[in-house]
Length: 262
Image 1: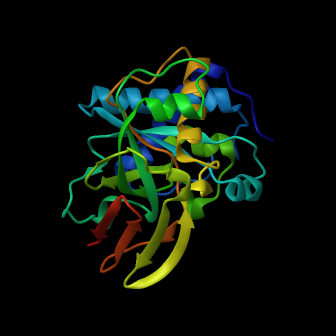
Image 2: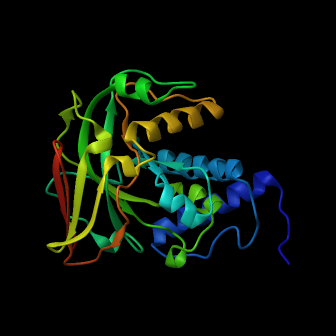
């Protein structure tokens, strides 16, 4: 029988468990298997994990969204996306390879990153986000769930900072007249196509996903400042990667980004 725990104790205990899993690169069982908790409590756990990272010298440099695909939401039996944060520890520079030994079970997925030019807060919509978007860029999001076999509930993955592992962003280009919903993506692993999609795979439009994110932040009393980098969600499914692999994400009118794994 699962024993209840006071909310504050649960948040701290689970945050420490996740932080230790990251540090030791060891997969753990789901947190909700021990004690069920709400998604709101999961964001409290996520905040505590990030606070520990910042106290250790890390700096938040980007936001990442997950479950922004309708198909993925249906697969998980949820009706809402989720978000997490990326720090300078997660960032890869162009040409830099990914050391898979620093992660537990990495998977890669292609995204269209957005860079904001002004503050966003409150009940914003798609067009508000587009007006505030200075540039877009090809990107790769490297997932690394701390839960064995990627077996988790929505609350688990929120607490686990949206499975943040690493990320790589290519050269930004001005948004201009680019219709992000129509931008095509070809995703390759080791020279073979493993996925194709368009920007509309992300909640109908990547900017719609960012608008959802800003509204969600408002629920917790926060906004998205100018100059923010946001990875709004994957266009295709994620693929496992390991030593010797390479992945390339190519986007119409935006460019491409490539990553090698050691």
